[in-house]
Image (tube, rainbow, N blue to C red):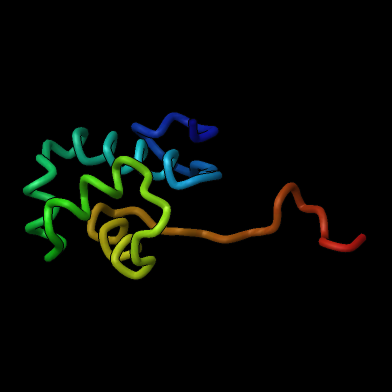
Length: 87
């Protein structure tokens, strides 16, 4: 599970595609959208949204980023715990 409450994500640490899928599903339902609604808004097929919410790890990254953006979410990449690789 994400490390923060995914229903009000100020920040959520996502470690795998299944966690991202759960977050997308929770945000979609919070926004009152059906999967088919989100697919239509995002210009994707319903199958893509189903696969995203199930955590399919091989989805096209740009499509995933587009859906997140449409839902008002963004991806931020930062170093873990302030440690520097190799130190």
